[in-house]
Image (tube, rainbow over all chains, first blue to last red; front, side, top):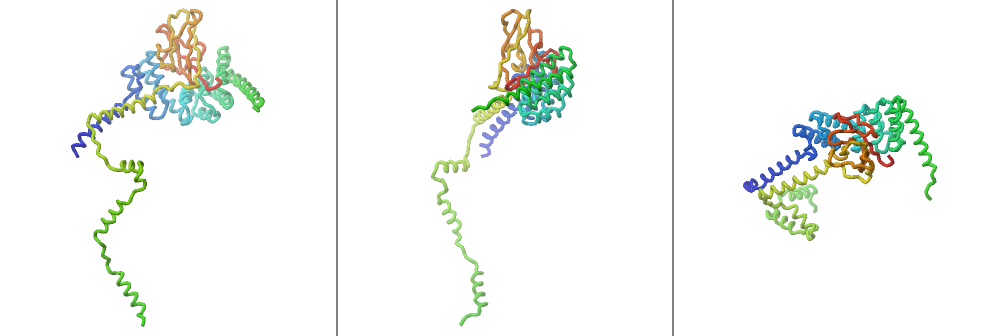
Length: 212
Length: 184
């Protein structure tokens, strides 16, 4: 009995353990594009994010961007690590039900200077996906609009504006800034104009006759 | 004519206190009877399967068979991991976006970004109409994308018609495209 156990179970157990170890070290094949010194660290960061139930695709893409642009390994690792932290903070603010796209946009907004409180308020203000509001917030802050002005404007619109309205709002702000308007003033003016358009459109939708 | 009540009770109690002798073969007889009683569902295939599942079986396996089983297990694990790490599958709500660059002196332009693994060979742009205009159409699902134009295998250009990515980590310029849900 003992020899039978030795002949069968032990090799099986060993093989399973080896296979499990090999599987646990399997990394995304796309990361082969990173140099040998950078790859293990990035793979560990991606694996850690995966275990934390964070989206890993943005991390892989950030690493691949660095590889394609021939950035140094240190720069790539720092960028991936920072993004992983921001994704975690975005998830804390937006909740565990946030989609990968929302978390990615939320991470960009946080990196631009928005606070987790603003992200949480946006979550409460809007039932539809937050990807576009968060991305618009990030882009506005990155364009030089003060965080408070950008957050106030996006929050005021997020509850009723469609994605298209928000994208048009951002374009209007950037256009006015390019024409020389102060960023905060451009944001306030564009928010007011967008809100009026949204209200007019909402009123028009309400006045449509119902179906028979 | 009648015995006193206490005496009668005393006699009954004495009788009940006597040890009872039980046939030593009783246990084995009872167990034999139990095993002959048909079990619920015993005649059905389900009952037979259930009895088979509960019975211990001896399985012999050669080391080669063990390795094959482990290899199969590893393949299953690897496939599940690959699925979880691969990019999101194309969604039905993907929308086609046209990217345009004016680059009169360029001989080759690629669109590179989060949507094609930053692979400069995957999305080459084509001249459209004039010699200066380069264009390509890419389906994109909702999300926020970083991208750039890679010109002649050497130069990175941001899209002049899109917001610049300020969260750029690598020095070379990138642009940002936000794709919303319906209506954007």
